[in-house]
Image 1 (cartoon, helix red, strand yellow):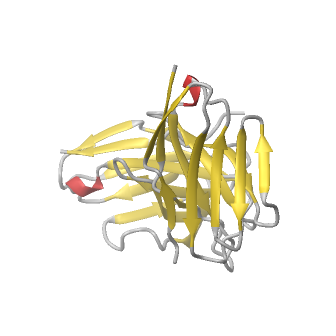
Image 2 (cartoon, helix red, strand yellow):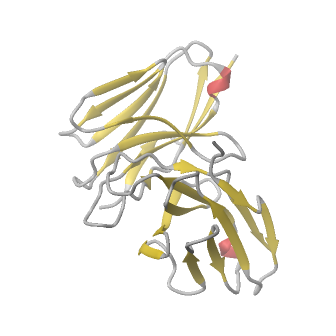
Image 3 (cartoon, chains in turn orange, blue):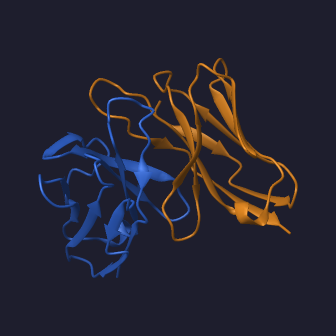
Length: 115
Length: 116
């Protein structure tokens, strides 16, 4: 019940195209859904995040769509650029008692943007 | 403001040796999380600590692994008698608070452990 499933595992998109990554979760106690971007040899960096009380959040070229009833959320990267080539992880967390907001990560999507 | 610092960045150990991984959280952060990333996989939660306390160690193997976050100094993840399956990238993250799920976790660059 703690899993977050992410697809696809890898994605190739042309420069200027749209990258779409999907995630699904089971645990209804999750109430925070961040996306992290990771470059090779680096740690993950927070990209954008959403709470389930909104259906969409946009920051620049990055948009999260959230479907609470389906327990799914997705990341859209508009006008993809070669510099966006990285691995993207969706994650979920929810404070349960005093256990802190540990993150449950999806398996990651390796995005390659071709010039 | 320096970010989360981890050292060493790369660590090579032979089977049976001990590995010590260090994490200095961002200034002012008193909540530390350790995650492990196996090759081609996502990050898996291991342990959550506040100063001098282990709050949640549900993701940490029961044997050979231990973690601490002393009142002074960095957080330490210790792996005794390492095996090849311990080879992974170990990431530390810190947050200002740990009460709310929206408290952002900032990740360090990781320690890449290779067990020969």
